[in-house]
Length: 118
Image (cartoon, rainbow, N blue to C red; front, top):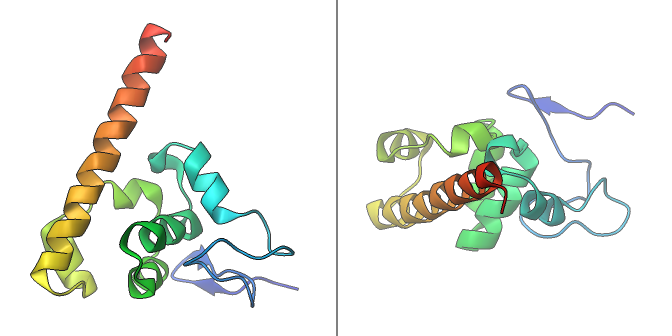
């Protein structure tokens, strides 16, 4: 059975929600994967799981699917791009941008620590 493709990104199999930890029987548990890999390497499904876990809002995970937001894209989002994607109100965009800044800083710190061998 082929997995549906939307905007170049594979959609999750039917019955496998992106906004929460997938039930048994779904491919890998998305939450576990995004917790173990650098954000820049996340798939669209992992971005959706991270957004849903952080914001608690399923519509942001849906937007990630709709716009095929991978981890690499996620780290480059700006207020303007979030606005064009339909993230409203402004306070929600600001909150998400703060969370993205924390994610970027965390990734940078992990990269620096791996360079120095700690």
